[in-house]
Image (cartoon, rainbow, N blue to C red; front, side, top):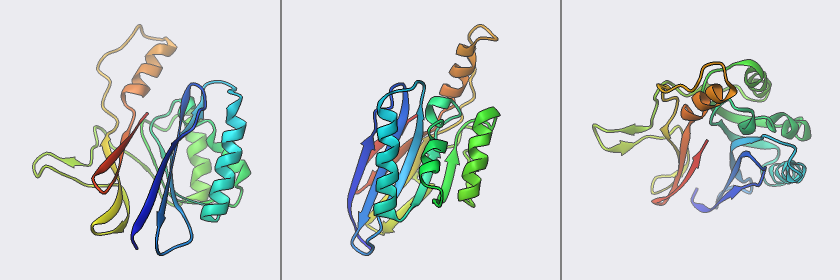
Length: 198
């Protein structure tokens, strides 16, 4: 299986994040895909169109399957469009789900819904990275392809403990902690890198 093409789409969802990676190979008609974050902070007009576009592409190109979902951290503007997308894909299957920060409140409810579509819902660990400084090499938390022609998802870093706090009790304090602990993901193919930072 040789990877022949990769597309990295960044959708406009207003304040928030939605990245969609599609991977083609020469051995399968099904497109492999990766969704990194899916959320918005407001009722951005384009979000409905984004949900419809994603649902159509996932259905037509991947048979309703999502290979990987990464939620970089537990702020709503990075996950609150997951449920609307799954409503459009009620029979969706998901290969793997990875997430940063703790499972709390509404974020935990979204992860529980994802668990109904995916047997592997996995948190990133504290200060986790796929880079090994002793050997100077990268690992990957998901990959596809064959030796010499691989697409690798590499965790640059996740869940760095927050040591600086704003005035306690404010929303800014919570948001600051979540954002500083966000996962940063690298997508590597043939020595080219794309970065998705929560």
